[in-house]
Image (cartoon, one colour):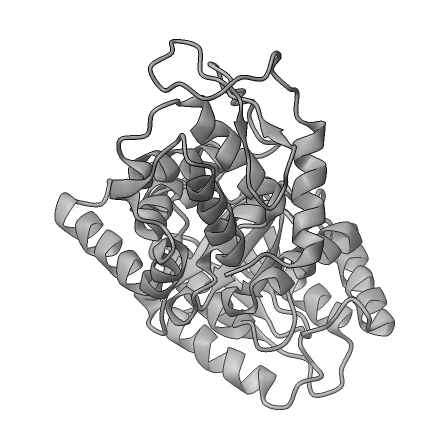
Length: 378
């Protein structure tokens, strides 16, 4: 397993920018002051400085919550019981099994030697091949090196991955009504994500209106209507080829008239290269903002984990274009690229708020950094 030339160049650039410890000397694990280690034989002459302390400055967001009650700010909801929580962790581990196998196939934690440059090279390659991304890989390796000895590489790596995600946060549900705009390319699972989210909102006492803003795709409104009915949500549609901004407007007016407190707006799947659709999405946002102060209160981007680094690129482009506030990462149960959650958070500063690990209502879950990290590598 070898890194691509562009990944080597990026990793080398990151290493060159890292501060160096002087003077250079051979590694001695018995020393109380660890020596610098050459990062990789792929990058000759570039040293990975070992530091005693690790800068754990917070990311520009608070990461995701452990339970639906925490995510939705429902103080009445109790914590998940140990049995339920254990079941969810087991389900997550099963869903991430392919990602975990891909990430750990090149690593033999029992024989990992912090003094062996080949072991660090294998770790770097495994992380990058697992779609963790070059910047996050460099940061994880730096933090692991700062620990000195590593008696349990898997546990240490899980702890450092968890730390990249920050502290739990909530979906912003303080609007009157709250407006959640859901965006993404076709095939990512937007429709099912909206239906499952509406179900959970209803379960926690919210009254929900679902707006079928995808007026382009054949059968999109019908599919969303079925999910809205299953969730017990009101449904607003505008007809095939209609104006999505008008659908959003009507949904907000319906919510105000009927006293509903959350509006979830679907949008047509689009790519950043589809200028007309991106402009239309901007129009939908303008209409929402004109009707409700500070809306949309959440802009959730749904991305397909099976697309790997393409998901990171999608998140970057949508963030720049419309101001994404969180990510729903779907199809984790069918991919070996589950590590993509890490660069979305670390490189882009976007919290992964929801994950999809299957087809049932229970398979959309609030993202939990600790459980995710443990399921991915430990």
